[in-house]
Amino acid sequence: MNAFTTWDDLDSTQRMRWRDELLQLQLRYVDALDSARFDEWPDFFMPNARYTVQSRENFDRGLPLALMDLESQGMMRDRVYGVTQTIFHAPYYMRHLCNSPLIVDMKSNDQVEGGFVLSALTHYAVYRTKPGQSSEIYNVGCYHDDVVQTANGLRFIKKLCLYDTELILNSLIYPI
Figure 1 (cartoon, rainbow, N blue to C red):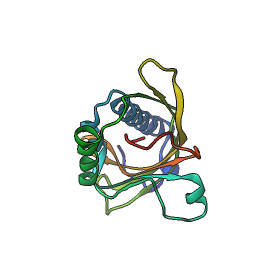
Figure 2: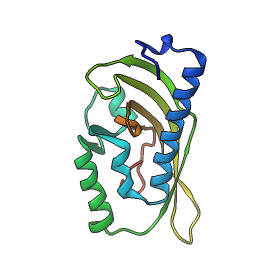
Figure 3: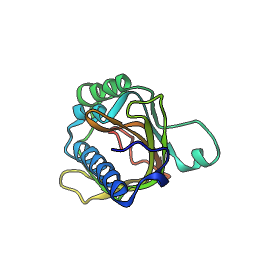
Figure 4: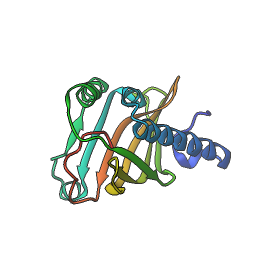
């Protein structure tokens, strides 16, 4: 894509291309989780990326407590190992529903691969279905994402899953 300094510098065709790429990233991300392809999950992130699952209440109050706070792709791989190899729980399926991402900012940044950081909000709802039972709402909230361009497409450098749900059913096992 062309050089720029902000989102406002892009023409409508360029904006459409970025929106489409970001939407595809989000759709591939939730498809990997919904299909239990957890080994793929860390690959959506840069090596130094941060993944956080935090309540809206704590976020709004400026409190740092989070249900999950992983500071690198390596920590994400450790989580995948724990989820797939060591944690025992009743099986269930997840299904994410997301709206189209809203790009809220795009700034040049020479410190990251691709030379820019794209910031976006995507509202989500996650349903959980246990075999033989009805589906239930598991988690609802908004992804606050920072994304960079790489040779392999867009990748997250920050994904904050800011959830509205006041009660997490049982526990948070899989990534949101």
